[in-house]
Length: 328
Image (cartoon, rainbow, N blue to C red; front, side, top):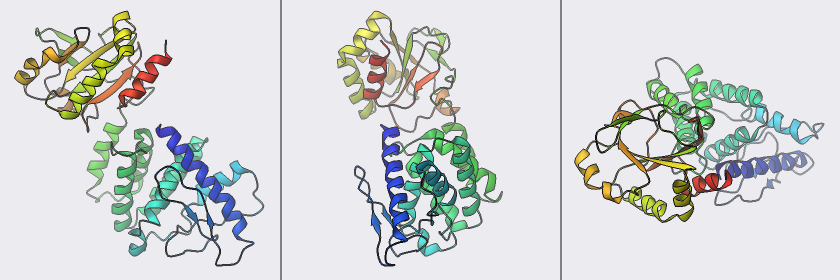
C-alpha cells in the first residue's frame, strides 16, 4: 500500500513536469494544476522558475528534454534550485515547503536509479545544513512523513537515506545529531530483505529459546502487551482469522507472540487468551532496553521467512495475511 501511495505521487510529479514544460508558452499569470491523489492536497505547478505565494517554485526543465525518464532525472537533480532555504517565512508556509517536500519524497521513493536518488538526497541535505531553521523544520517533516507509524508514507529504508545525509552534512554541534544517530540505528534494522535481529525469550514454564532457534516455514512475530487496547483488538482479529488458523495448524506458519513489557504477573494472568497453537513468551524487556526492534506502536507485527529474513516489517495484519496467502 505504501509503495502504491508513493507511485501515485510520483505520477503526479511527472504530470507536473509536463505542465511545467507547457508553461513557457503561456502568459506569466497561468499555472498548471495536477489531479488530486487520495486524500492529499492538490499539487500545483507554477510557471517555471517563478515563486508564487502559495506554490512550490519548481525548476525550469529545458524544453529540449522530451524523454520522461530524462525529465524526471533533471527534476530530481534540480528540484530545490529555486527554493530559498534561508527564507524562514517560506520554510513555515506548509502549502509550499511541506507540500513540496512530500512531492520530493515521492519522487525519490519511485526513482528507478538508486545512485541518482542517493545523490539527490545528499545534495538536498547539504543545501539545508547551513540554516538552523531549515534543519529544524525539514528534519521534523521528514520524521513526520517517513517515520511516524500513522503516516501513509512511512518508509524506514528511505528515512535512513535522509538520516545519512543529515548526519553527513549537519554541523557537529547540532544537538539533534544524537537523536538522528539513534533513529538511524533503529530504522535501519529489520527491514525487508535483512536477517531479523536475534533475541532470547522465555516460555511460561521458564525455558529459554531464541528467535533463530525457533523453527518455522514462515514466522509471524507478534510483539504485544495484554493491557494495550489496540493489542487486544488485533489479537481478537488474529484469533478469528480462519486462514491464519489453517496456516498454523498445517505447520506453514508459526506465530511467536512476545510480551515486551515489565509486568510478568499480568502476562501470566492473561496467557489463557492466547491460542493454543501459538508460541508465547516474554523477553524480560531486553528488546526495548537494547532497541533491538522498533516498537513505537503496539502491537508490532513482522513476517519472517524460514531463514529469518524479514518479509514484512511493522505491517498491518491484513498485509501479513495477504503475504501468507500468496506464499501457498
